Each structure stands twice: as structure tokens, then as C-alpha cells.
Length: 214
Picture 1 (tube, rainbow, N blue to C red):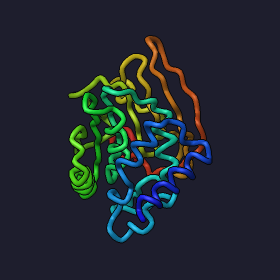
Picture 2: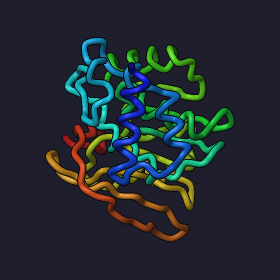
Picture 3: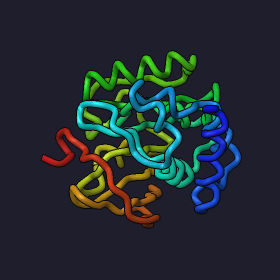
């Protein structure tokens, strides 16, 4: 039954024009969303809507996850930094896309969610993801530079420490705006400056930490 519901969800996201990549489609099958929501929410896992995962946080709407992942243009073997692990679903999708030769580092500031994400990833035997507790707005200097950076929380502006940790020609996907509505930007870092384009309006929980919302 869950497989059928997942297939319906995948078909829906494709029909609204968000899902284009066969690799992302396969990743959605390999990491079913029901493994990344609380037990009480499993019956809603395959609806295209955000769901509460505790600690005033949500797992993003599936179509939003797909839109961000498509914009990130992930390649096999890349090193990715995610800010805002949540329950770990986005990291799991990215882990499938980078493959065994790639790696995903993901930072979460809330202890309960760090534990929840680690448990969820372990259930699916996903080993190329490291969940780190910390202030995501500072990035992860220890493992920089990154091929791709994805921020799954609303940001007041481009986060400078994260831009510094992105490789030249690397891509960052980041929602920028106020606490109620954000524009999703795809930023490409060039040798001199950046290229920046918006792919639409979204709504995320706010980024906390030194360079997030106060």
C-alpha cells in the first residue's frame, strides 16, 4: 500500500512540473518518506504537504524537496553540505544521488532532531551521511570546500560563511526572505562574484544561529 501511495506522490510531483530527473525519481523510491516522519504521522507520509516532526519543526513538502534537489543539480561523487537536517529525508535523497563515492554532511541545531535523523538514516542503512549537531549558519569549515550547499530554512540574506565554503562553480540553493515568505534562490559561485536566480516563492521555518534570524 505504501509503495502505491509513494508512486502516486511521485506521479503528482512529475505532473506539476517539479520532477524532471530520473535519478531523483529513483531516489524517492529508495528512501520512502514514511521512514522520516513520526509514527503518528505515517498515514500522511505520502501527501504533498509539510508535516510536523516535533520541536516546532516540519519535514518539507515533497514537491519542495524535489524542486530544491532539481535546482541543486547534484552529480555522482560530490560532497554536499545541508543546513537543517530535520528528520533526515532530504539528506537521504541527496545521499542516493551522490552515490557511494559522494558524501553528505548535514547540520542540525536541535538535539532531538539530530537523534531522530540518525535513527532514520540507520534504518535504511545509509552510510554516506554524517549528521552533526551545531549552528548551521556557520557552515562546516572542517570539511570545506563543498560542491553543493542546500539550506532548508528561511534565511534573512545570503549567508556569507556558507558562500565562502562553496567551491568555485559550486551551487547553493537557499530560501531568502522574511519569517513568513521566502524566494528560493539558486546561486552559482564564480571566480568573481555570483550568479543568482529565483525559482519561486516558498515558506520555511527560520534559520537560527549566529547568521540566522535573531
